[in-house]
Amino acid sequence: MHDYLLALLGGAMIGFAAVLLMAAHGNIMGVSGIVNRLLPPIAVDWQWRALFVLGTVLSPVVAMLISGQFPEITITKNPAVLLIGGLIVGVGTVTGNGCTSGHGVCGLSRHSTRSLVATIVFMLSAIATVYVVRHL
Amino acid sequence: MKQLSALFIGLLFGLGLVVSGMVNPGKVLGFLDIFGDWDASLAFVMGGAVVVTFIGFRWIGRAGKPWFDGRYKFPSLTQIDSRLIIGAMLFGIGWGLVGLCPGPALAAFLVEPWALLVFLAGLAGGMVLPRLLGAQN
Image (cartoon, rainbow over all chains, first blue to last red; front, side, top):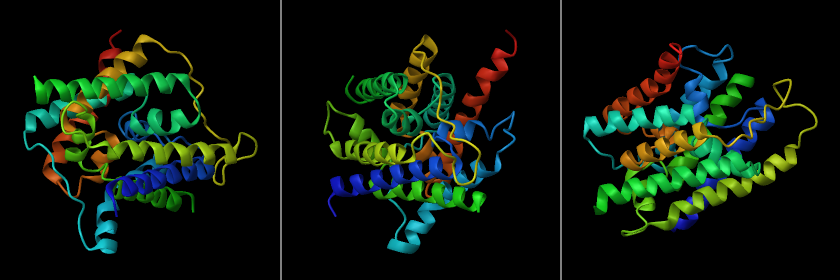
């Protein structure tokens, strides 16, 4: 299948997951918020969040069982870049109350101006970062 | 049933990341590199997800109750302040540096465990850090 179709199909699956989480649990599918509430002070209703995370972590194994191959992943092996990158994503998502799933997918779908502003800012800042790293 | 459904929804989300290619930081960086050899495909991930979520949230509405909970917890914040802007800006820098946002960082863990362990340790530290510093104010 063409890359664009796979992207559209995968995107629809992500959207379907967000709709199900709202319909079943009444919660916004914001992954940074879900992970954040599993860290101290741990939320009282941590169980569903832990299981959501477990499901996502296990997804490549299920993909392997269905398609026979692990997803292709290219990632830097530089531990300093990985650690600092993770750290900035952590600080940024708790400060700005969300990431690609919460602001990008759920927020835009609710016509939240707040999420629209956040999405535009993090897209521009990510594009600028890649430009600096790759082209300067 | 409630907990089991969370496992299934997390799995569906992760499979969406795998199918779309969003799980692959190399591909994400190619998407963000609009001034280089741009890979536009990931725009369709956001497009597909927003269309389905938009229709789904309309269908859910605000009346009634979720299947396993007392109420829908739609966010109530509307304020656009410096916290939101600075947070989103920082998040974008980290995302552009490695190509990982929180969801794909979980989905990629079993494929590249060592790299993801370092990234996730940073992520957890970065989430807890503002609380520790804030406690002094």
